Length: 272
Image (cartoon, rainbow, N blue to C red; front, side):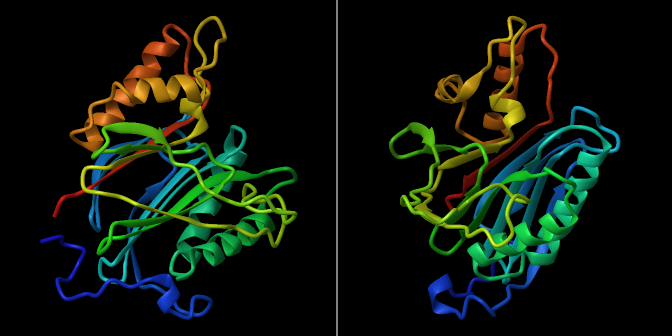
């Protein structure tokens, strides 16, 4: 049995709750901005995390955060990237993780990210910002609700179709400014998009240190090449997919050193 989920726990949708006031009860599973690589289990999901800061001490600008909420009904997942390098960025990344911990129990995801943006903005240095991808996974149905705040789009493998694509939102054109990176404008609104994950589906979340890697001739990897790499990845496990993605990026760089923090968060829906 899934250790995070009680067998008699009902599946709950956000539209069944008073979203502005209801709070989840969340248990932090993993999170940080320091050097790490390990497998992880979340409600309904098997995962793998690799965080490789350019400067391991005091830590990088990439942040990941994983929680199990409401006795395994919901998994909350976040990956973020504070712009820049150096100690001030590491400090900002730590503040961002603390802000995630502060607001993660907010039921409505759009409200969570709006609060996260406002909290991060209060302590940010001038012109400091962070991109973020935040998702809520419902273990009872396989639904994933996600919000992309200016972050690079995750890779999505659909097992039934044996096809890779980018996980993109469907935000309609509007005069309202939405889904900006964190720390730019107070009160920014954030949208959310829902997709269905089927057993065997994979999500590869990453930071732009992966997609914007350069080789020795200063050619950038880019999203098109990244998608091409994904099509050759093993899909039997998130560990295999995540490790091979990083290995392929390293092969592309060749003799060129990494120029940014590199973080990958791989998740796969279990069949149980």
